[in-house]
Each structure stands twice: as C-alpha cells, then as structure tokens.
Image (cartoon, rainbow, N blue to C red; front, side, top):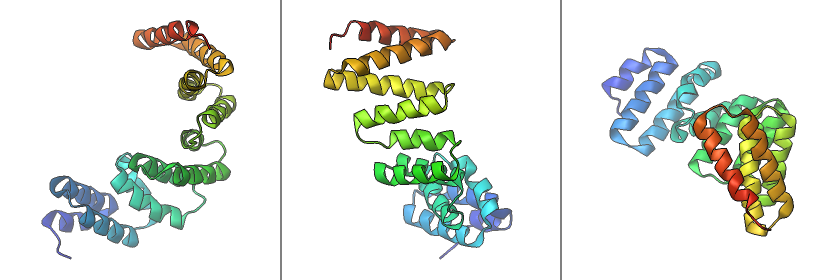
Length: 204
C-alpha cells in the first residue's frame, strides 16, 4: 500500500493524529476501500484506550466509527459505551434493527444505567405497538428523560392514527401535556400545542 505525506506525518503523531489524517484523506478522495484498509491497519496497531479517544469526534461518521468500534467491542465485549457507539454506527448506516437491538441489549446487560442503550433498544423495535411499550419502559426508568417522552408521544400518536387506538391516543395526549409543562422555548411550546390541538380533535 502506498502512503501519502499526510498519513506519514500522522503516523508519527499518535493514534489521534493518524486517524485525523486518514479522515482528511477520505474527505478529499472519497475512497471507501482505502478508508477501510487504513482503519484496519490503525486499529490493529493501536491500544484500545487511545483508539477510543481518537474515534470520539467521529462517532456520527458511521463509516469511520463502525469499523473501529467493531474492533473495540471485540476487545472489550462488556464495554457498554463501546457497544452503544457501535449500535449507533450501525443504526446510522442502516444495518437493520436486529443488529442494533442485539448490541443495545448487550449494553443494557452490561450497564443498565446507560440511557443511550435504552434509547437504541427502543428505536430498534420494528413493531409500532411494541416500540411504544419499549418507550414507556424507558420513560419509567428515566422519568426526567424528555427525549424519551417525546419519542413515546410521537410513537403513540402514530399508533393511534394507524390503528384507531384510543388507548394510544390517550397516552400520546397525556405525554405531550407532560412535555408542555416543562417546555421553555417558544418553538417547542408552539409545536406541542399544535400537536395537542390536532390530537384532541381526533375521533378513534
């Protein structure tokens, strides 16, 4: 494999500098096979702790985070944070709910307090009704988690509309009402009030 001046300079500067150089080159060239090859070489030669720190800025860049967190999880199979990061990379890359859900479940088993694991566990459920049930579990476990409440309300509203379900409709309304009591920003308040006005006019 040929090297570029940027990757050669990065190799002397530690794992983070090497990964930064790899990502810069990928942005310039868009060469996915080369990216995968370079990431594999980097992971093979890097201590796990340094690799975790280096990949942190690229957690939302699934083509970078996925391959590296696969290596990290293989080395540390009970690391809940790494499992969540890999599950998130899989979710962003469209790997499918089964792979994401399996990783999220492993993360929950490793650390039941990891909120991100619970969110991915709920998101990865393909059944609308069971997804609502999962979000209910998340909001029960984390009562102050407003993002979970918003997901619960949205999914309950979708279920109510799709299946003419009065129980789901009631759940959506009560959850939106709870969110409205704590909303502070005018756009958020307006969106919640609009959603509630719509749902209260539904007949199911």
